[in-house]
Length: 74
Image (cartoon, rainbow, N blue to C red; front, side, top):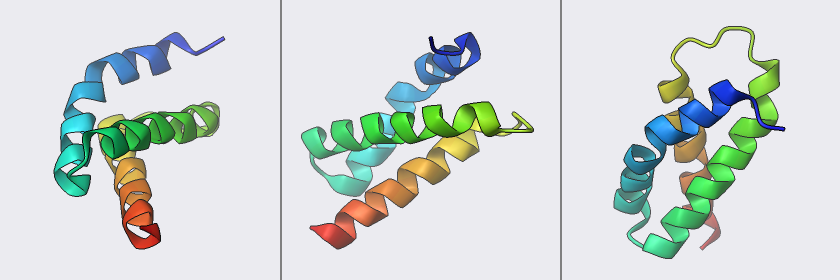
């Protein structure tokens, strides 16, 4: 079961982060896949977070790293 706080985080920031990824990657399907991967990585790490400050910035960091990785791969 997903932590309700994580669900709120996803609901609050998905559209914004998708738009950011679309601008970076210039492909709606790749941006969508990258967003999903971002949230999967965040979900795995979320229980280990000691401080839940700056979660928006944390998500942007994950998304940026994943997008840059995809750009290097392809």
